[in-house]
Length: 71
Image 1: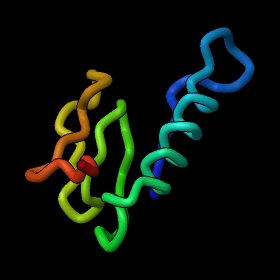
Image 2 (image 1 turned 30 degrees about the vertical axis):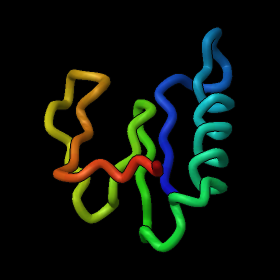
Image 3 (image 1 turned 180 degrees about the vertical axis):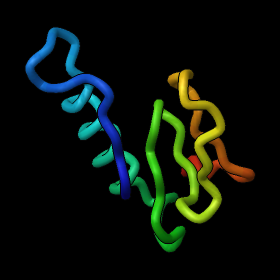
């Protein structure tokens, strides 16, 4: 599992705790097993091999051909 945080822990509204919670929830989900490395960014789950950054100025810039969201 790979996660990222945009706001540092020293500012109001730091997103690391919520991202960590989401990452643990996805990693623990039975639908996430045997899917390889997953990338969790902006509450979207992607396969690491297919993830690309499409725009440097937008928050929802990471995309992949097939989302890996566990069902």
